[in-house]
Image 1: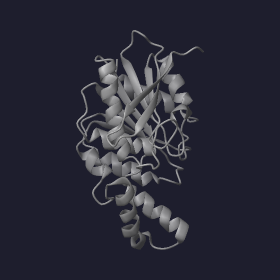
Image 2 (image 1 turned 60 degrees about the horizontal axis):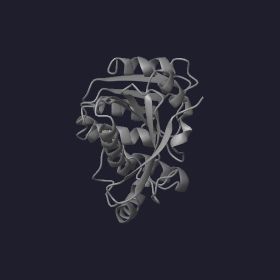
Image 3 (image 1 turned 45 degrees about the vertical axis):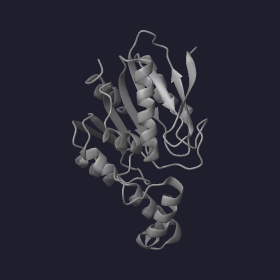
Image 4 (image 1 turned 90 degrees about the vertical axis):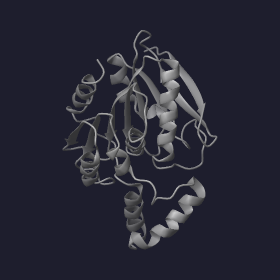
Length: 248
């Protein structure tokens, strides 16, 4: 299918050039979905989501996270730096289309960006948000990983990890909290998670769900693992039924 696709660029708050793929097949539509990809991937990977959204009359903005694809940057901020980038993209889109009705969607690290973003002030163009396979705190996920790799108690290693993060990313793991962000959320949220997810345990999804202060729904896919829920026949119906409540 022929798509009207554009490469868009903005500057991040800390001076990186960021890239997004913009697909506009619905010239007259103000319905937009911003798709945040997951770890070790790039803007072009969530093609199924793009196809489904496109066929339902949505235009698409798919940013490359910092350090991925055509975006500059050496490190991932694991969803913290990226949530500021996401807010920049939202503002970019609202300038482009002031009547935009925007849905936010992210997978794992992308989900973290989305959950962190809804805790900040967002333009009223943002109508709802979907977080798939999101973790509750960066700290927990790093600690578990360190434990898996080194067999040490991750708690003892965290101060040195945090020191490194402060040097490189200029924030402390102790100062940031996705759950705190969710407690400030006013954007309606859908939490999606795979019961078989071995990387981000299902408990994270429940913790996020209960922390979230806005209207919220949750769907747990029985067979779903880490970053692969789309084979569940219920997945896209649930996904778009939720969106339909907020974007007509």
